[in-house]
Length: 277
Image 1 (spheres, rainbow, N blue to C red):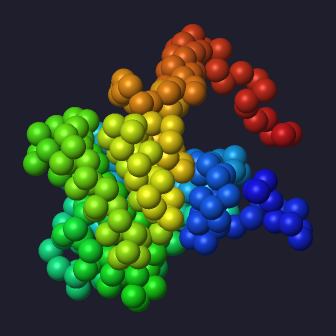
Image 2 (image 1 turned 180 degrees about the vertical axis):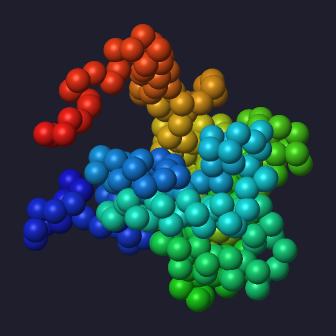
């Protein structure tokens, strides 16, 4: 599969079924986060298959230490912006903390609201306790992505952002949870910060794609936070590779601008208007 529509030569629209086909054919899935129109448009044009409107916006956009403070209002705002910029990638919106844990009814309402804002699927965290909620969402036509391993909304219960599923018992539980999420109707599962061998076992056991973050190279796809790979955050994580230093470039541009304004060299004649032009 080359990412192109066989009839028209145009880039294919990514759907849940396309992701399943990619898993079956062994084609790796690329995923990144986005929170606004211009970056969503750029990622879409670059051929990224899955764009996650992540509750990680709480960290990289709003400056919070955890993802817990962000709510439905902010997630709807970012979902609308991303949906305006991305036309080909599948758009998955994170359901923020307490938007789906309180009751199935609230989960349905909130997931539906995200879909109305432009999401094409939602993601929620957790294993067995989430099965009935996932089943109900899928029943009414809302695609659901699962999330196991390090689940950031449970950071305090997990005592920090530590590697998960270290023991044999914990690994068997995660594998069981993954199978149950697949049975409940999830179209894919994010595996975060778990041992590589376990991620490989889960990926081989499931017919649906696994998307890894800090889970090694044997998942069916990979996702990272955009700000981390661009050098726009101060995160220094083992599983993150920086592909650019955009933060340094922005600082350099801002510094040059400040010097030119203070020195009177900007704006110059070429940046100014006269009565004639």
